[in-house]
Length: 372
Image (cartoon, rainbow, N blue to C red; front, top):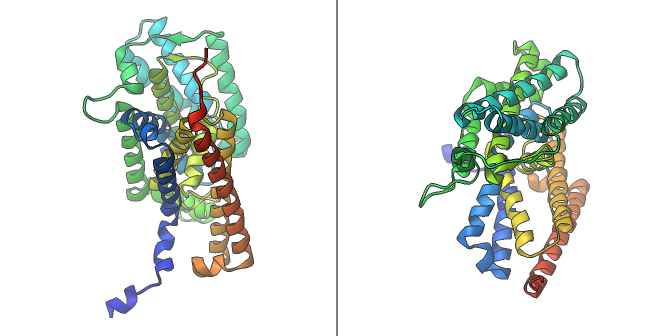
């Protein structure tokens, strides 16, 4: 009897894991392609460390952004929060003689306060998330520019550089441990706590969540506070990684993090979240950008490739969300529909363009000549 209940079609059993399968397939494709084209340079230990260090910088923000997007929000101010928090920490250490052990927690608390301001603007003044956080991005960046006055603050204590690029001998880099710890914490918070359940409930139907007794506005504020603190932690990690900070640092944090979370399967419509998917999305983007650098493809083409992956992923998950709302049954049945066929052709075109770009880079990788 149980065997009959459990005998479901493979496609139906895979549906809950589509968010993970998508980025994992792309990661596997990159590994296979680079294994054929540039196995020595791409898979050497130093390059793997570079990929992990780059991904680790975005993990705390991806964790928090997963909660924000799941509840139908967005935060475009995280790059400015990271920069302003890093600037304030640097001033405390360099000009006011604060211990780094005190300056780092103050910077993270400052980020949480900026997240609190974002949340209050959105909930109390009813400013849309997109407009509110975009405006505050300008405000926080302006404060950073005023404080720094064009200066580059550099040369910090070893503790801070260890946070950004240190490594435990014979083990993974310290920033990777920090990033993975935040992702694990986010996973537990999402799947094992009322905070996670309320986040999904609010994203699915805010009015119904309010009627069940959930304080929707307060919960939204908490999510933005978490986002601000995570962005400040990323600012601390960035400062340690570069051993320097300036007001114009972290200009594209918001786009990179939102892309990673959406590529990982968290729905822009709210109500659907995948912390493991967000982790895979961060890793995928870091691997892809590193692959393009390894193939000596110009930075502008790197942006084109990143955009192609983001657009393809967002279109796929948007289509999947529409399928859920319409009540259509089964992935294969939906793919056979006219809209599904259009989605398959569109995704194939974008992925094909990306493969061509990688192939061109692979064919010309050996032609680089030393300058001078």
